[in-house]
Image (cartoon, rainbow, N blue to C red; front, side):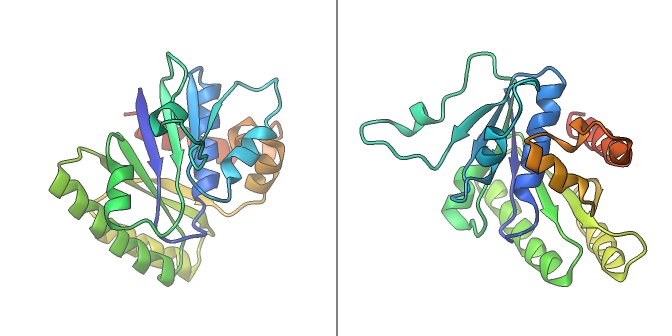
Length: 214
């Protein structure tokens, strides 16, 4: 079972969008998939509750749920045979709490937006992740993922310069498009949209997933 953590201390970078699209892509590829929602807003589970029955099933876990007399491990159980677990996280994770999320995951996907505020916050967050991973010897793979990018803009050039300075693989650049809003409203992944306007986005996700699964 492979666990993929979608995380960034900076809020509003698109963690839920990335997590839900990862989960739907894995499910559509025939892999038994679970989606953990640690965000108090519960947006990933809202998306999952809207998912039509005709699309491949995704097992949802409300990781914020608290029940008296029930252990955390029981609440976080997944069906036997689960192959991929995608974990959506809240913002502002630091220190010991961040370390708990990094434990026992295989890949960490860090979405970042093309703005100076976001890149500076992400730079500090990457440093903290690397320090925690080194101290505890967590063998996680870190990946950057540019999100909501617009071509030929100064903001994009700034994001590209930031990425070049990091010793972390780039999964890809996801363009700023209303297709993600349409997919979210339908409870599907962007690669599951039927119309041709999503072809570019499907191609981007195919390349992204190929690298993530390599």
